[in-house]
Length: 552
Image 1: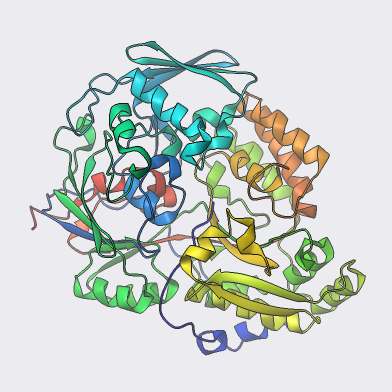
Image 2: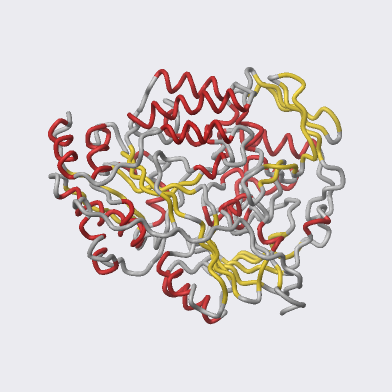
């Protein structure tokens, strides 16, 4: 859900970086909407081999590569190339076969996964149905602390019903389980190796044992992670061209830009807007912009937060000049959002037209209107007029957004105090209520991991969700989303979801800000990597190669 940015450079005051127009958030006049960059889901197919690629993780070093516990940018960027899931996400955000070559649903509460024969772990051992069952059951055990444990709510049993077949039975229909098999939830590890590694599985000490196109060979804490090509990879159509990929942890935006310009680092996803400005005029490589399932919004962290009051939410939304914000903070590489789920999530869905119609019917993103915002503040039930908002320390983009909002909020009598938290504290507040004490809100840089909008909506609206910090509850929303999850027919499910979306868009205490496009830089010697946000859960490095012949 969340991925804190951890750029270590000193944060700059927004008005130094923004134009005069941008610094007048909430004023009557607005800047013209910025021209959106050209988006692409892929880069030109690579034709040559590579000895080594140096790739950066701008959010910093992962804390784990255990698929059961991976749920953030850095670990997912690495793990997606190591541990194959049962289903595979594609660059256009559609889903196809992975370690499950096919699947059947003989009835609405039974899922039969037909496993691919010939898939082997890096140690040469054959992947079996028992490994699949063990990988799933391990996540159902609370001791594992899996980020996916809620996906088992409707699961009755998971059984090996053949050497290469696994059958999952549900107490009620559940469409999310199948689609979620395309991320770390569906990744398969060797059962015997996991048992031996115990709680160190997925760490620098415990290592991994998976079937992916690359295998983990070295993890030097604080320095780098190295993966090498799996020469016995089961998918002959996706044999990696790169012999080795070394992941670096450069979190400072300007330092990263310099390393990319010099060729010390060959590429990176999630480069900052500032780095993109520097790099796109360089002959060192190319900045690619891709469609994205990322979402940025401001959300309350407790029921007592002033932001839990719908009037305050509406007022803050009305002091945001989003056109100026996107132009000056996101460098034009983002789109305005009516709600917190970007359209890219459902564009390849079987019922995309139903989702599109529902999204179109939502109220338009409001223009800045300080007078109306001030009236809403006067009508608000809460009388507290200050908000303490958390962002990751050094995250320039979030700081700019909040400073932008801070200026507008001041005009309607609301004080925004920005709290910059260290990376571990910022990441921890999403799971540990004690770390949210003293905070009223946080900037979320989230993303929808699978092509099913329902999955993210429930994270914020379900009464028992780990991320429903305001104890939001709407009986109708709960009923509609619950019914949607149990509805197999795509069009009916989409219809139920859009009804719920229309309701929670009115009363859920969060302020949608924007959906950033994916920003990736590739050195001129490289090509092939997907440019869309789908990289987060697909073996993107296996597509990476040289633009010409073999390059060392």
